[in-house]
Image (tube, rainbow, N blue to C red; front, top):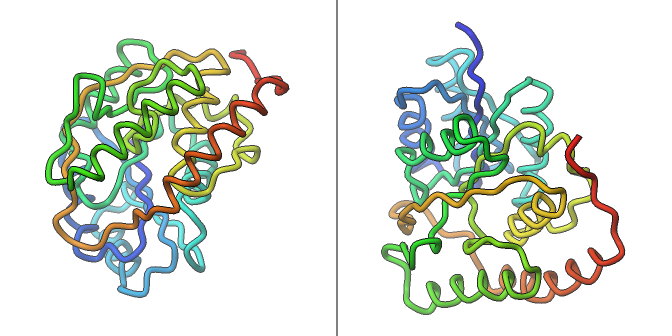
Length: 247
């Protein structure tokens, strides 16, 4: 079987209720998308489930096992580096809990592969507020956090904290991945900001975000405080930083 041109990175910590179904949904898509799970030592046996799926679908599903909760950002950086080594052209970020609908993956793929964008974002806010089953306070916090980031940084993106993204290979090759400082959910902001500062083309694709049904959320107030204060520092630092440009 020829290798796919695309891999979907799914970071996990205690996702045994979701992981088999989310991988199955990805593998059932018409276009061939491979899956890389980056598991942070889940004590619930998530990695064992992934390994059994790997046997069922050889050459389509892979895993990186890490020895503890090391942060969302470092999980994706590890996945990015692996994907580059494996010569994938399109590298996706997606949650394990079905808050990101696998049926939307082809639209993100087409934005890059057919329409020529370098980063496509599964956006909750580009056409309004498309969030289902979140408490109103959390919706408002997320929405205004993105507006705040847009105001501070000047990046022309409505959903700056989105975790459902497709990067073209050349973006990840251009960015110095080891220089990305945020480890939590603000990692998503820094990656988009850096992509923008490097001169890459960004497209927001409208999606509907649905709150998880199974498993526990990993969100916390500290995530938003990291973003609030970290964004100011990131913008300030950018005034004195030379970003690599498209080669």
